Length: 468
Image (cartoon, rainbow, N blue to C red):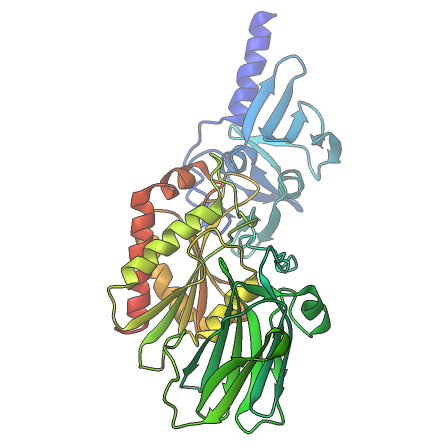
């Protein structure tokens, strides 16, 4: 009996872990855009009307463990809370406790266990496909776009916490009127190319009444069209910074103007405009139109938005910020740039606020920095995402510089409908610098050396793109 049991065990073991032989004409198995090497045994093939694939090859590349239970003569494929089991002699499988009928029973061929492709998709949560013309099995375990901040979950208007509150914005002729409920000392500046007046209100946030009464984005940003002023065409406003909380009001001008501010009754701020020859009235808060390129560096997430949690418990927002600050520091050596970083600490910004910062600064390029994640530890590598065709060249150049220094798998340059790359008007790219959910990627990503190399590669790509 012991010898018979041992023989059965060896037979089933060989079915699951076959010694594989070379097959030159093997149909291809492509997982997440990468061709899996089928080193030996029976390859994927179309038998009748059913496409059959080797369970061992797919399982290993998805990080599953395969176990043989002698008492029940059951093969179990395990990963995390997922469990797939097939019992010898049956044409059905059990997936997470639910019984699943198979198009065809498992087939043992040349020492390899083949199972129906449809079952692989259902059991392992994959999107599958078969191209009979090229004899290619396509398996997709991860969408081409990694998860970023939820576009439908905007940052709430912050609590006042002793801050002044902006209650109303209006314009009368060439006078801006801003009503607040606290003492406000504004910072007013002018910029040319195009002509604008910038009014920053430090230690200020939007009141709830203002947010509810205006036609604004969820984070409070918005604009007012102006028709009765010879100088002003539009007024725009947004939370420019959360640490410290700062409201920024931008006056888009029809011509150059100077601005003087004063306080009226009940803490009403008055900004009076006068047509001028275009000379700034004060040190500008934003870069002037001096021929320098404006680069926005956007470390993703921040504050309550931690992003991905890595295998060891590190959070993506810290990785993003570390790389972003390194990029900012390296860019300082280029006098041809004005560099603006969307956050320098654990500040929480909405996606629209990041866009607003880029738009208000009249940026030439926008680069968002992220770490990738997925629900399983298998996917890994570098991918670069963009939304608009104007951004493709920037995406290609940055990917070309970043990929070689990482040594990670090339997941390619892809299009994706991401808020920060879609709603900006300058070339905008989101970099995914590896998977924090993958143990191998994560171990390297959290090192200072890797982050330094990524930062330098990003800078090299920016320099090439801007042809400096």
